[in-house]
Amino acid sequence: MSSTPVAWFEIGSDRPDEVQRFYSEMFGWSFEQGGPGGSYRQTAAGGERGIGGAIRDTDDGNYATFYAQVDDVAETCRRAEKAGGTVLTAPVTTPAGLVRAMLRDPSGNLFGVFSPPAEG
Image (cartoon, rainbow, N blue to C red; front, side):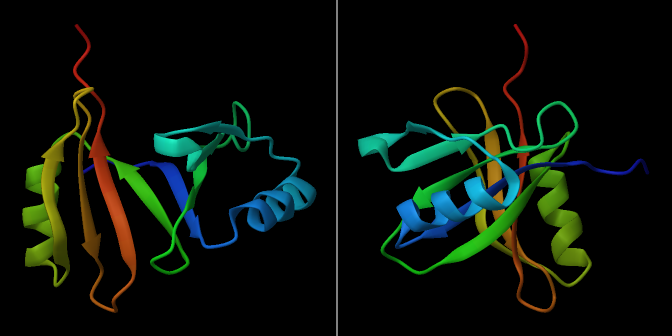
């Protein structure tokens, strides 16, 4: 089996302006507002060498998580459960064709997996 890349991160915060300022000052990341109601702030953190990510405005708790890009989200969920993980959100396909799921590792850490839309 080949190594699976971490391809996206997301930071949820009830103080997104403060968090955006923090990461801008720490790492020089710039953000663009987007998403429903402007609640999602995307960054190409790391430029060509790093991964992209976003800060999400949330009232339901603060968190940080990563997303690994996989070939088959459903199969990855089956493997995760077999290895002792938990599938929190079964695979779902977005209107744009991206397939994603949310999981927890055996110690309770949250992470996501996704497959990009098929090229057509």
